[in-house]
Image 1: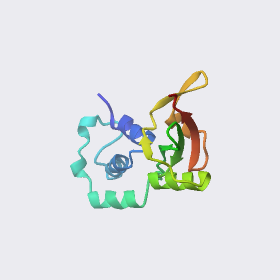
Image 2: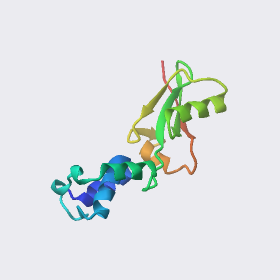
Image 3: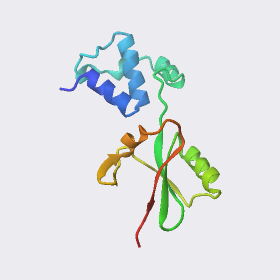
Image 4: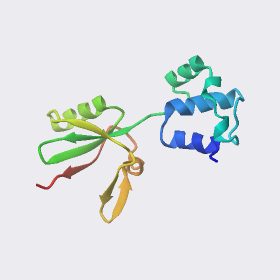
Length: 142
């Protein structure tokens, strides 16, 4: 059986802000412990107003960054790490002096081949210190 500790660690790793703040609140209020099994997690015991304030104040310090694919033309795409779709599009416009044809968010767990290795966008994101940033580009073959 999975523990609260493992779930909390996953929430922090995958940047699941709402659930992480809920668990944090229940831990602080001593309504659960990290050693408890998942079955002890009862979200109804949380003071949702307090949790909402925690999320709004970003108590746990989340700075969610996503990965966006922006279409340059019929064959070329650029991948941009950014805090939002709007931020990715603005960064693209500033960099390339035109609007992208479209913009789609990808999951950070999407894996791609880089050289001879496979890497996820989540792992690649660790290579950057500031955002938005260009992760790379892709050219589709016809």
